[in-house]
Length: 423
Ligand code: AMP
Ligand code: MG
Image 1 (cartoon, protein in one colour):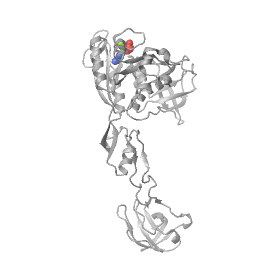
Image 2 (cartoon, helix red, strand yellow; image 1 turned 45 degrees about the vertical axis):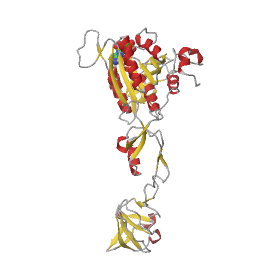
Image 3 (tube, helix red, strand yellow; image 1 turned 60 degrees about the vertical axis):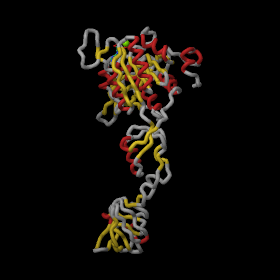
Image 4 (cartoon, protein in one colour; image 1 turned 180 degrees about the vertical axis):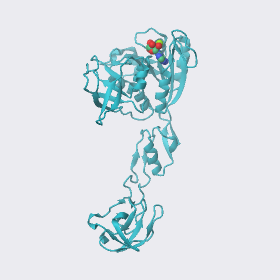
């Protein structure tokens, strides 16, 4: 994609080949957004236990070998392999954390515990079940099966001194915290958290805690957004429900964009809809309004207002979630300083037929379940309406039907994208 600026595209959409705001594919829109994202650069030092989910701002380099010493993988006896056929004299014991300091000589062995340092002179460990003991002497059983170097964990076999263990840009997971601690590192340098504000727009929306008047509905998008954003570990500002009032919308939008890295709104950005939100976005920023070839979640607005990135999600609750997962999540991960990986997709048998028109990508809500024969199958949920939030709550996956896919028969292998851990 070329280095066209948002401003150029807003003022003259024809300046880019293949750019049609009324027919953007999911992949095109994703790639389009990526080119305007500049990750945060400010960093902070955190204790390892405070860094879960944060993005490394510098490589973690191993300051030592892990493990630090050759050590025993078993409870047993350490000896010289060349002595395997001899009667060996036990000259002491090596415990984990309490090494046996003397050297082992010919015909000698040391009783050794798992994790204990291998004493100098020994090169092999035999399991304690594979010996016969007589006072302080042992003989090895089945000597032919014993190999030189057996049951020894070598120094540096996990990590080597100077090795890059985790790269800058890596988002820290539980195993990483342990890995960093195993190197004796107490603090890590991470990027500052991303500040994300959101609000819902619509005269019909009421916040929980107030009674509903006729024609009103409770705002649910702020709650799903709160949940999805919390999973990403960003700093969240919930700016509430803003009615379809131009002054209130303007004040809220400007405050939100001046104080945050990203602002997300839902509702009121339908393409062609003459409403205040669209006019405001055009007045204060460079925002593109797209009809994406997807279902649900057709209208999407993306752009910049001042230094803040702006995402205008469709108001329908399922559409808002689908567009968040397919576009916003990945953009936020990039802005956090990391590299987004595609959500895992794999093919499973679908137990029902699906009606589908070619030419758009569909994200149907499905339930992936374990069958008695040990395989997994997927069943689409009956009500695929873009306002039916209960389908999203029951689903554990999206059935992803690409643009080229048409009607599907029951028994066909279809692509699914797991939502477990995301919702
Ligand atoms: P809009 O995109 O504003 O035209 O809204 C499309 C549909 O989504 C309408 O039925 C709205 O009532 C509904 N909707 C919009 N925002 C929300 C919200 N925050 N929570 C629940 N439903 C919403
Ligand atoms: Mg609305």
